[in-house]
Image 1: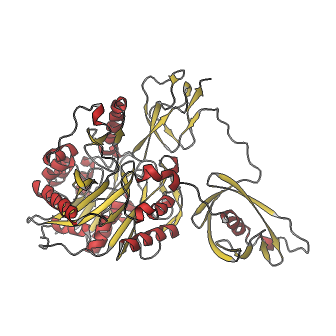
Image 2 (image 1 turned 60 degrees about the vertical axis):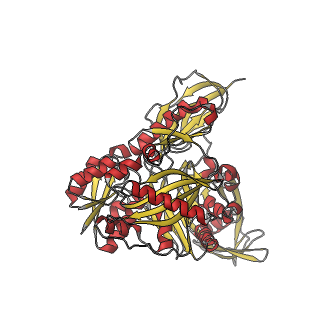
Image 3 (image 1 turned 135 degrees about the horizontal axis):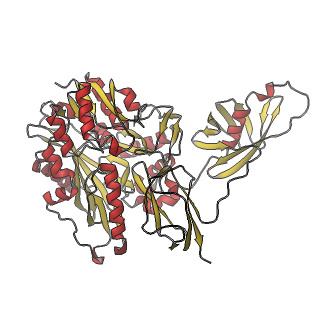
Length: 614
């Protein structure tokens, strides 16, 4: 019987496993990097063990340190979570060799399936070894891991070598394994997967389908169960293939078999030998706790002969600290507050007041809704996200709400090209025009009481805010009866709630302020000084860092004075386990290169200057 579990992971999944362990009466052990010393998962565990360092390679990818931590803390089992070492057969063997119980599939099964190249060979599919023009477009893919890291679409043969190098570097950084392979790229298919659960007694449960077609950079954004719009024949086919894959490697525990569905056909992608990020939608539909089932299977308990019945529909949205309108650039800073309405599941690795750093994935939380029908579940989730309180860095919340309400998604006609087609429309700014006035009135609350009231008209007060990249100026005045603003009736105004009436319609605005940052409902504003300071001027052609990160690569031969063409790659930044390419904005000369390899930069830092040719 398991009495203590170490989770070889961080953030949201560690907290999620700890929650089940507490319910089962199992003691919990966390591991944490120096960057995560005060992270929620480290605080939530009964015991926490430090992994010296901050980067994944120095900490969460060090299987030897994690096994030592498990032994030192008295844990008798290890749960790998997902990502990092979860699909590393060597790590699983090291856990078992240390006399610990492994809450996952046998190492041989991981070895057979965790490498996507070997998995495809097992299923009778060979990767491309020599790419020609006729094969394009192709997909470069990391053999280990997932989450879109180490993955590149190549449409021009001349780009293949550079994209292979970039994918290898990203895969090595994220998974400690730089192996990549090439396969045909199926455009605008649907990403469909089957959850399986297998025990040590020969029983394999296929737990329905999931659709994960809404993706950015090959990383899932919205997932749902069951996958809508599949024929019964196709459902049976992918379920049978998933069971076949599991039986082929004597699989044990939770796993996922993924397919790309196009033209009514299912193309095998891979088998993930671990728990998936999107497992909550399957839990909601089947009424299961998959982590509890993993633990029961690891203890040797048999599954029932048949799985439970599916009920209703569930949808999950991944809330990321990123700006979709700026090439999905990750965001950092203080998360002041995060909450969702009652009846909505929130899985997160953060609590109010935590800092979001640069070292790890930018996912803040998974937000999950369950309802009797798909229509109800989608509507429930969109409404919950719209009403969620998120005070902190820029997130993809607005994108999620618009995606869930887009006609293609509501009609279940989405595919993996959804964001390629619709991103500009989905990221158009739509700030609330009354938000600056509400912020100003909340700030002015009670000021008229200071210095006494005078029987003369007060002068209009002015406040300036930045909102959605634009400057807004608002005016109001104090009167005998309260605050007054032109064109809008002020029904109520205090520091946290403002009620305005315009055109006979009354609206409430909840206001929160943190320094010079103000949140009015879901709109974020920055207070601007009354007398602006002179802004820092940059030369034309200046390239500024779009996010915090580390310079991990400089293009070969690129130095000050080098001729460049528009679109030429100059350098790569790595932030939150993803690499971002910085390219020349125009044809001309690289007049300045302001960073060096390994340098850490903040948002807005000057990276380089390209002088355009005349």
